[in-house]
Image 1 (cartoon, helix red, strand yellow):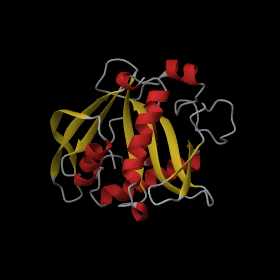
Image 2 (tube, rainbow, N blue to C red):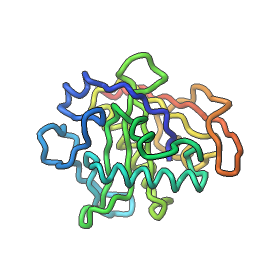
Image 3 (spheres, rainbow, N blue to C red):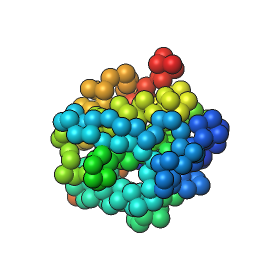
Length: 215
């Protein structure tokens, strides 16, 4: 549900610090892999009480995430219709990101994903840009807000000092999630953010959260 803008530069210093392999190298297939940092896998519960596991994304889950993004774009829900022409373009765009899957604990069903990338709005490698998508059948259940809060927490644990979000101006649901999560300041806008399925061009609203205050 949060739009794109993922940086292609790997955060190699953060990789070494946390022992995490980013998408520049591979997607973790086994969550017992010693390269996965202590923050994942993480067992927790959704707002509706269901038990979930947040873990490093597998290659198959990355493909599932791309499919969810394409479906969201067709619904004009947080992603532009021409954002990605194919999966390879999507994978290239998220190089250097930290990919996490939210799965149901007892079935391993993927219901949401979030990726932490290096922000294009900061000339360095210590500000995060979150990329969040929720399965269409799981929306309106508080999972978007759940993912954003965990993205903030994971970014802080990974050593990021701040977080930028750009959200389509017509994405009322995501704007409300950002407001409900708290801690974000509206710092600007882009008049041309992306194109919807019906051809309409919408702007983007830019938000920032300082993670240094939460150390």
